[in-house]
Image (cartoon, rainbow, N blue to C red; front, side, top):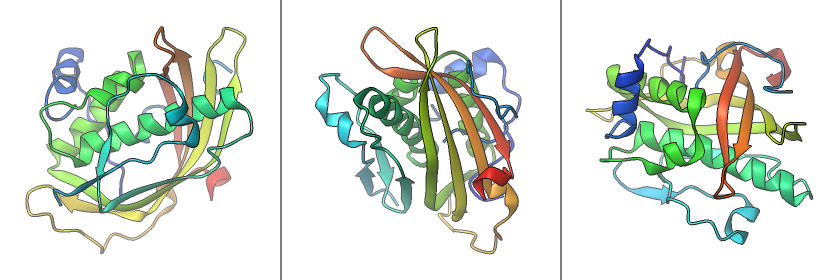
Length: 217
């Protein structure tokens, strides 16, 4: 296992506290369902999709360390509405990785792009890295990204993740373990539900994932 770690069981109170403190990209163990849901201190700014700068929403800045590179494919579909959904999906992933890799008093982007079950599972996933004294480094690729609008007004985003280019990093010593070999579990299929809030932000509300997904290999 490279970027992933098994999510520890965390009570609601602990997870909520986590979101308000220093520990506050989608991790593989949130659930396993292929159906569409509802159908180093230097840092760099995470690159948003082209549509990100075209709205007037005041968004929290997301920064990632220089040794963390998230590559998102297919962020422009030609449909402005779908592009907006994919852009907020991208920001949600970056917000989780920021919380894992950047030590800070708060990580406001996490709550900005996630809510409900997705927020709690993200908090548990992030906490598992801190509990293990680990972070990660390297390149993660996100591809086969598709946005679908649902009858109830929500949206579903499905995508694949390839984490074979990432490696565990000790949080204290900053030592990177490059002895870790790639495995099928580094390919994960995600199924997410997003709902548009009053500010116009597409927040992820639920996430299902499948490790060693053949469709992503």
